[in-house]
Structure formats: structure tokens, C-alpha cells
Amino acid sequence: DIVMTQSPDSLAVSLGERATINCKSSQSVLYSYNNKNYLAWYQQKPGQPPKLLISWASTRESGVPDRFSGSESGTDFTLTISSLQAEDVAVYYCHQYYTTPWTFGQGTKVEIK
Amino acid sequence: EVQLVESGGGLVQTGRSLRLSCAASGLTFSNTWMSWVRQAAGKGLEWVGLIKRKADGGTTHYAAPVNGRFSISRDDATNTLYLHMNGLKTEDTAVYYCAAGATGFDHWGQGTLVTVSS
Image (tube, rainbow over all chains, first blue to last red; front, side, top):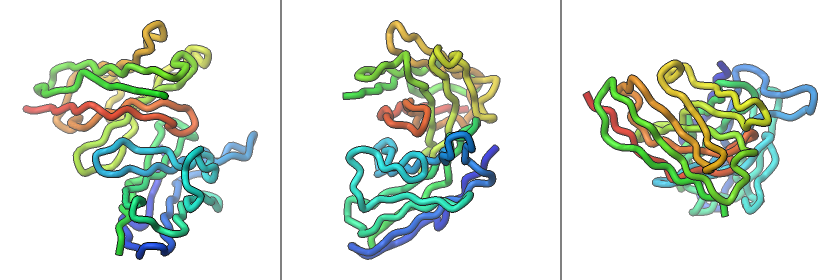
């Protein structure tokens, strides 16, 4: 199984500052035939289901603010919130859909400092 | 607007069975891979399993903790996804979400709570 390990488990960031969440996969999630990483990021606010923010490691979903961005380097993936807003307080999860069993990271809780 | 509405959750004793349903609307259900994802209280997300669209074989895949106990089926005529749960254990207690998508879950239901008690 592919293990997804996020870091940190939680972080507190001042409003307007940058938040960076890391996710490392235990093996590659890159399909060579299309050169795409099968990696998504979700945001989950309390009492709500998760919301898809980014797919293919760096493709922002329609309607997602451009302060959210995703990047990759090998098996290391990063979700960046460039300027944290109050409404961004949530738990963020990475998810690989490269191969079953599909797996999630353990989540990173983002709070306001 | 896409809507996924789960139902069928509740309190059940260990060893018993339960069937969850997910009614879908606003999407071409028959053309969509569907999954179940669960979340225990205060914990992270856990993928339970998926069923591919019939054009991709309609095959199912499951996470190890539920393999052999749970099964997923779909009725494309009624746009309904099912999760058949047998031999329930206390560790199956969670909110169960249905989720749509093959390349990330574009849409999620609100979830239905399953509580397994001994």
C-alpha cells in the first residue's frame, strides 16, 4: 500500500502569512504515460465533508481561490496557502489515487496564530 | 447542482449487517466512479472502497480492513450507490461518505453515521 505522510500535524499561521503543508508518498504516484502525479488535496472544515481543492498535484479546481497552490518534487508534494484567511481554518488532506487501495494522509490542522 | 445523499446509518450491534445507500443527482452517475470514505470521530479520512463505471468493467476494490466483509454495488437505473456491510465491528463506527470521482473526489455527500456497539 502507498503510505501518505503529512507534515506537520498542525500549524498556526498569522492572518495574511503563508501556510505550507507537506505530503510524502512512500512510492511514486507518477504515471509515466501521461507524466501526471495522481495526487489530490482536500480541505475539511468542522462538520462538513471534505472539499476538493487540487487534483493532479497542482491543478486547482474551479472556484478555488488562487491563494491555494500545489507543487511536487518526486514523491514530495506541497500545498501552499499564500496568504492565510480566516476562512482557511480547516484540516487539509492529501490523497493518492494512483493505485488501490487509495490512501489519504493523516491530515494537517491549520489554525490562526 | 450535484447532490449525493447518504442514508441507512444507525446503531447496530457487533456482528450484524447494515446497508447504506447514496442517492445521486446532477451528474451522469453511470459514467462516474463512486467510492465510500469513512471518518471516525476526531480522526482522519479512510478510503473504504470503490466501484468503477460499467464502461471500465464495473469492478470493485476495497481497503484491507473491510475486504471480505463489505461490498459495494450500484444501480445505474436509479442513480444509487450501496455499501453492504456485514460482520460489523466496533472499529467500523464512523461517518460514511459517498464520494464521486476517479481522479480526486469532486463531490461528496454529507455523510451518514454508523455506530457499532457491543
